[in-house]
Image 1 (cartoon, rainbow, N blue to C red):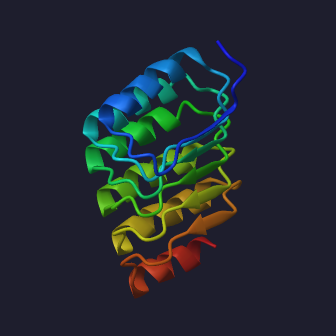
Image 2 (tube, rainbow, N blue to C red; image 1 turned 90 degrees about the vertical axis):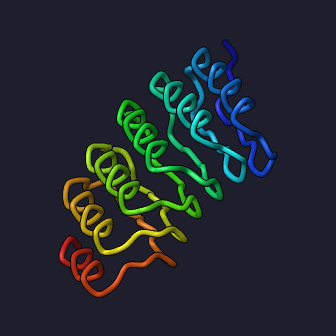
Length: 166
């Protein structure tokens, strides 16, 4: 076990096998506080292995997976795992092809993550439905102070629901 607290491997073209290897190492290194794996080729197997490892990273404060194509199933596994990360303060999932189903999973996780203050879901495929779930997260999570939703498919109904949650 090392003292490593921050690992950034953005844009390194790491695929599922590399992510799975990193995930196995993370399972042994519970001191990691900041992990950024954005811009890699993370698919279903990789995000599943990562989600399993994150269940053991109780001190994780920040996670970046931006510019990765994550499926709804992968996002569900990730969201479930992040519920165990009590220290999580920021989560960056911009440009991950997040759909409404993924947005709902993330919103449910955010609603119970008492330390989460920044959630970046910009440049995804979220619509009014996901905005409604995120509004509920805003209402229940008083620590959430920054929610980035620019360049999504949120219309008037979603904007009104978000505004009502403010």
